[in-house]
Image (cartoon, helix red, strand yellow):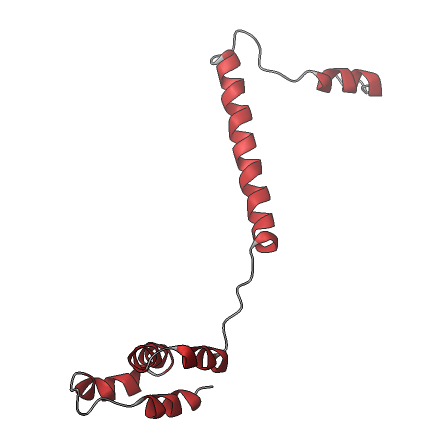
Length: 121
């Protein structure tokens, strides 16, 4: 530093063309890689900022609506679907039914399964 104050035009002229010297190692390739790295970083930052805004919020389907949709299915498919829903909402209850599930004469009926699910609705 020589102690002299820089004029505004001299400062702007000095900042206008900040580049690596032509004889610097890497040269144009280094500048290209620096530009690519900065662009990738900027894309990552912008993507991270926009992700919560652009992500669609999936509403959790309500249990009563799911139970109503099962009405049109045949009895066996209703039972299977009710067991899947019960496994999601009350896995302990499904564990208690496990011994009965594979016996055709003692399988739980759909009314019993609906009543168990109604406790969670």
